Structures are given as C-alpha cells and as structure tokens.
Length: 112
Length: 463
Image (cartoon, rainbow over all chains, first blue to last red):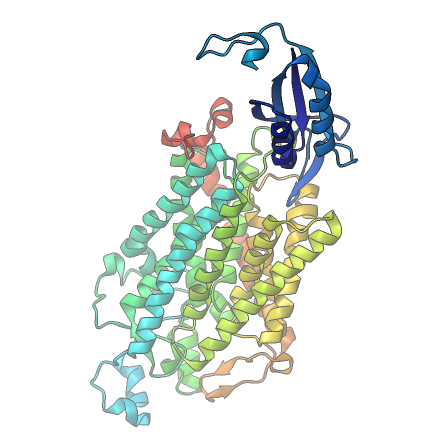
C-alpha cells in the first residue's frame, strides 16, 4: 500500500476528486495548506505598504491506495492538476505500513 | 452653515420689505421642507460616522484591533454629542469674539422649539434645534476621523482624554472662526453689513469659503492626526512585519456609507431644501466618482493592479476635497477637483508618507488633511463664475459680487494656514498632556496581543 499526497492548486480540487473517484478511490482527506515552491510568493500592495506574500495557498489531498492502483492514480492526478505553469504542485508517494477501518476493524487494502 | 438668532431689530426692515413674511407672526416660522431636509441630513451624517467611518476604519486594521477602532469612533460620537449640548454649541455658535463664541447657550440655555437659526437666504430660517443637531454631528465626526491616525496602539482612556481637550480648544474655535456670522438678514445696507461682519468669526471676516467643512472638519482633523501619529510613534513592527487590512469588503461598505452619508453632510450644509441644494448634490456625487476613478487608474498604471482599497480611498479623498467647494463650484469644476484629489491624495498616502516615515495608520493626514487643503485652495479657482462657479453673493447689493480668484486664494490660504497651525499646536499640547498624565500607548506586549482583548476584553471574531 502507498500513501499518495498531492499538493495542488486549490481550484483543481473538484476535477481531482472526480478523476480519482472514477478510478475507484474510496476516500480522501483534503486540507487547505500554505507553502512555497518554485512559484515563490507574490506582491500585494495596500496604499503605501507593499508585502511579499511568501506562502501561497494550496490544497493537499491524501489518498491511501493499493499498490496496483498507484500508477493510474498518479497519472490521473497529474493530468487534472497540470496547467503547465509554475505552481502546479507536487505528488508525493510514501509506503504505508498499515490501514485500519475503525468501524469494522478491517485492515490492509480492504480498509483503504 | 451659519447661524444667527435674528433680533427684532434686524428683522424689522425685512418684514417691511417682504409681504409674504409680513403675514407671519412676530417670530419667523421655519419652512417644513427645510426643517425636514436638515433633520434628514443630520441622520445621514450619523450614518456616515457610525457605521460608515467606523467600518471604513475597522476593515483597514488587523483583526485583533477592529473592535478598538469601532469603539473609539462610537464612544467619541456619544461623548461629543453630550459635550456639544453642555458647552460646545455655545462656544462655536453664539456671539463672542472673533475666535470663541460666548456662553449664551451653555447647557442649551434659552434654546426652545420656537428658536430659529438663519440660513443663507434672507427671511428663511430653520428650527435652531435642527441646526443644533446638524452641527452636533459635524462636531462628533471630526474627532472620530482623528482616531484613524493613531489606530492600533493607543490606550482607550488616552483617546477619550485627547478627544475632549482637542474638541474644546481646536474644533470649537475653528468652527466659530469659519462659520459664525450674524446671518443674511443683518446685511441690510453697507453700514449694517460692516457692523454685522465685525461680529463674525475671524476666518469668516477674512472671506475664507468653506461650504461644508473642508477646514473645520478635514484639515482640522487631518493635521491633528499627523501630530498624533508622530507624538505617539510608530506601531510595533511598522515597516518590518505585514499589517494588511483585515477585511476589505468592510472597507468598501464603510466607504460607500460615507458617500451616502456625505450627501447629508454637504447638501445639508445648504440648510435649505432649495433648488441650489440639488447642485450641491450633483457636485458631491461627481467629484467623488472622479476621485475614485483617478486613484484607481493611477494605481493601476503605477502598481499594475487597481485595488478595492484604492477605489475606496479615492472615493473618500474626493468627498473630502469637494466638501469646502460643493456649494461654490459648478459640476465640471467638481469633477476637476475630484480628479486632482484622487491623484494628490494617492501621492500623499504613498510617496509623501514613505519619504517622511511617519506611521499614520489609516492615512488620516494623507486623505483628510491633504484632500482638505487641495479642496480649500481649488475652491478659490472654481468658485469663479468664469469657470462655472457661483461667485460670492453680496447680501447688501442682493446679487453676486465681483470675483477675483487671486483675492479669494489669499483668503483660502488664511483658512488653511490658520487651521493647520492652530489645530497642530492644540493637538501637540493635548497629546503631550495626555502622555504625561494617563500615558498614550499600551505596552509593547499588549500591542502585540491586540487592543480588542487588552482594552475591551472581547474579540471580534470567535471561530
């Protein structure tokens, strides 16, 4: 099993949800986050005050998937989240040692 | 915007001349339309202060200080309303010397529902109670404007103490100097006019024109704000940490309420629901729109994006600049004044502010003082009948007199200069006095925590 963590542009969330649901994802966790990458920040100006906003709002999506689903899932996420401009985000894939569904006590891929 | 309690002496010749009035009783009876309009205008000025100004300011501060600003405006309004009835009205709007009025109306002594106040037309009066309330709102909004300059760092008690001192020794005399006169009925012939003029306020005698309060309200408040920002010092973290406005929609709502309320402020200053009031109405709308556009497009050109804060700021700058001029200029003059105000105030809030390094939190100086000065000086230019203005009415000849831009410009300089010096000095002394007794600022730790919890024990946004 793998944990896929995707950090994407906030307005891509709906498309991403549709795409992974079509691939059979049974659940995902969404968090509003801030950060910086190659995109860096941007300037905001309020009368005489100019501020460089270092951290940009992004949306983080976490999905636990069975090993055989990892590749298509990554491909689907990358396809919907890509605009081709700096700031499209990143996908992290990490090994997942265990998953437990609290209600039933199921474990492993059955619980994802 | 002036008052006179006509004596039977000044009324007698008028009654003889005006058959329409002659049927009336001994005391002049105010027109119901005028009365209704001035009371409506008074409500509009309240709307412009609370909530208008309070929201405009409140949105611009950080969320930890929004209640402190709302409270400072709200309580200042209430405090001045009471002081106005106790001694303020009497010192501003009764006969005294050229700088201070007298004590005839102390505790509103002698003011009854049948007392009348003069307008700008001979034989036309409004109830003095209506005039009292209308002027009350002007007295209350002016110190409320100042609190924006030292927002986010002063003790609540220090703000209130300052407001009382400054209102008493700066607002009241300036209002008396600019607006007090004997009323048009006193101007029957050259000799009577000279005698009446000698009782008017100092700047009125100098011929300074200020229709709705460019000097009395805006220059007066703006310079006091600058002095306050400098005496109090900069906010902790000014220039190093980000202090963006916490709620720009609130700023937009506040600015829009100011615009609506300002119609009462400017058009109400005509004191009569006369045809001319409609021209003042048009001037106020046009100058404001022009200034908002000027600020927006200039910012767009200079910074790359037109901001909501810029449009709202331009709107207020235009309102400030047209305030002294709104009853003296034509609609095209109003548009030019608005355009100039948008550009000049934008510069004052950016280039000038950066160059001088003061921390006027909400740009009270840049918008109100600079806009007020610009409006006061341009009044001299666009009042000229050759530029579509009204000229100045000669109440002896009963016609518009000869007009000279140069002469009027000198008179306007008197108004601007004296107000800057007088209000600046009073504000400096008042801030020093409060600083030495109560202490001006909260501690650095309290300032970082935010005035809402520290001074008021509550938080604006829970969850």
